[in-house]
Image (tube, rainbow, N blue to C red; front, side, top):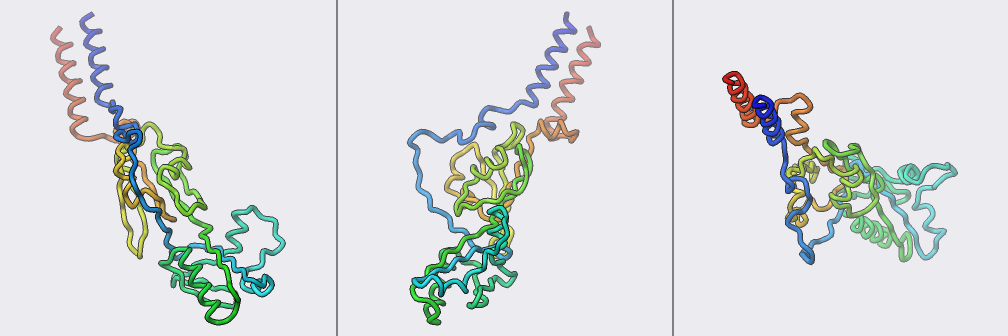
Length: 255
């Protein structure tokens, strides 16, 4: 009986070494009802290799036709059709529009591009009261690590939150570390790595509340997941487990 009791105790101790607290799993632990905060909508900045949809209209619709790419007769899914009708932003940050030629767009928001093209059409006397609509049609986010469906996802919203992005990947698995979500972002030719804690609310006022096109989100595995993959965990946890096993072995031998 004593040996059985000791073995049961060992099992409980081993389980405790791999347990995680409730606060490490639940999102936004410190968020309460009516706990409101102000934030600003984030403007998406156009980068090289973005594909822009640019539609130009005017009072005389027929005069605006040459300024738009022809849709052709191909029957394609909407997403593919938008890509074929879009303009690729070159590494130099320019798009080549019909009639107008090259227009520099890198570093601008889609609203600023609209104004820039409108002003150019007016100044050159090409169209009367032109209306320009610009959108990024290949915005994508890559989500890797401990999520249910990792991969690269295309989105069409101008403002996509990190929670919405994680929802595209089916949310984190139970083995995902919620306290150290990494966001890798390219801004002005620099790679920036940010980190947020989903169990707290302070990240909702950070620059990473909204996803930017080409962001990469990385969710690390927790210690239990790492150990189950055959990788040794932290030295402290390993030594603690070995100490419990060794002590129990010595007790059993002494009986």
